[in-house]
Length: 294
Length: 288
Image (cartoon, rainbow over all chains, first blue to last red; front, side, top):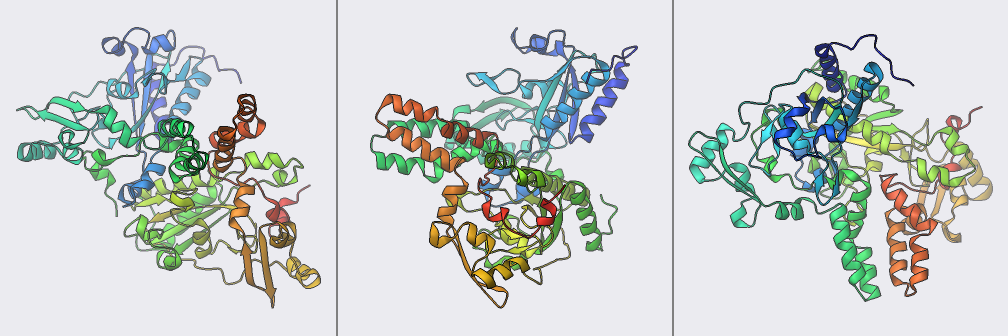
């Protein structure tokens, strides 16, 4: 179906308001808008929204909560490894992009998030969330924390539509007051204590006298080997070992092992490939009120 | 929060059933968490969600009447998955949490360690009164026969439906066949004593014995999914000849295993023969 060509372009505040309503109705928990110029300060040339969509003027970012609160309560960590993610943010962003293209005749596309070379995404959703005013970086693996919900999953749409931008958050979400108090007492925040870099974990850092993040340390390699045990990475690792194995009987045992079966399953059941460790987020107080139910 | 009366669990249940039906479920029921005592420890609802009070089961998303009509068996192998019903159950989980304010978690589809499910969906469907076990294995709904199920475990108190009073299987037609020929349609299509997977015996119109060769069934019904991939990979790596190895890796069989793992992304079977001949729900499969 051809896009409707509006007689005159919609007012940017009207369009922005419609888009935000649609995104929330489609399952988004939060939605924000950033003008593309905000990327110039942080991202090298070639990787900015207007490099991906020529003529782009705005980026719409949608965040969703991911695991149900019931899943957070499950004592079997494996359950959340499988059930953590439901793509609601992707669905919402497609509703937004479809609306822009069909109702205004302007371009809109889902921002590319998967790595195409190395481990770098074409466009960082973490940065997009920060620039759209939805959250700020945290001590916990640099995860972007939203002030109301804490951990969220983000998707974005790049569009040639001129939209009303949201301001970036002026106050850092992390550390929460309780984490500052914990840090003052034991020298670590709850997330650092759950996964301390000096005891084989992934996180470290310091808080300054004003209660703000002073320094962050995140061992990405160590974290990825723990949080991504099942998925493409584990499949590749296991496959290399299987090919190296000379003994046919042992090779057959490796191919039919629980580990390889789960690696294969996780590639098909793609939800697992996001991450399988939530411990730094489990202890994070941001958004805890939203996770507390009856 | 909901308009439903907090002191009236029936109102919650009605609202949930309405949402489920609107989302495409054909049946819905509630199982008592205490009734899962026959499940192994670690696989009961309260093991997965401490404080759980109910298991809400939805069923539907089974192959369409036209799917059953297709003479191309590969068609249903690639189009029939439980994705739709699982997605609906997850949507209901969010509904319970965001509208009612109680915890809810989706029992993951498929299997985990050792090929075991987190919680048996067959057992949940049975305990919620959605259907009963059949000679062929699947839980058959009285009206629709074979369907896919999904379950959410919740702390929301809901009135329990409990086990169905009467067994759906054997259907009267199958009983007549048993009396005449000593077999049923499903047993005849896949007889365990003739290389198949199913066996059993009826007495006084009821199932008194059933046999199911799970291992044999698995290698036939999961020919193109993860087990098929593992088998083909093992064969390819065992093959010393480079040209033949390349042929295995580029074969239709290997290509299909990769498609089935990524495209049909939930563990599903590729053999429907015992269900194809099942008379339960046949009226819904026969259209103009």
